[in-house]
Image (cartoon, rainbow, N blue to C red; front, side):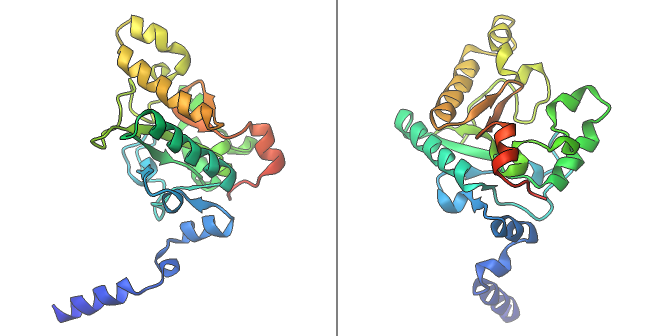
Length: 221
């Protein structure tokens, strides 16, 4: 018991940098910022730290923190403030943010040659905005900390997740009017903060265009 006590005390005094994973240190060395450290009221639940995602495997083996480029982070903090103005007891939850290109390649390997390839950016073509730390996969938590219903789960690769199909989905009974309104709320606050939508994924928001990202920012190896 005494040995366990000393282990706990020793761990407590280990500097934070020493506790960080190799990937987290890599992100910070590249200039990306930990979202939770910038605003602790934004919830973080990285979906690729678990196997219950579209790939069926853990993709972030040593990363549990969500990072963004400082430019995109400023927008995310504004979005949280905008949400609080409209619904003081709601808050944002981030499911994915900056993503190394090595992880993007693992995703692409799962979908290439299938009908799902349209949902994953090809690393050979420069990847997507996640690979620059300029995109977030995001939703809203209610006052009880429960995600608002959005018609599909995050990471659903199919037409039910498309923002262009929502009226038809409501009309056909595949989505409720409340779920559509929840999506519209998310889009409203994210657009107000400067983000851009992605037609095929209600949860995905880009800070800028892919062309601008390639011209002004560095990809994450």
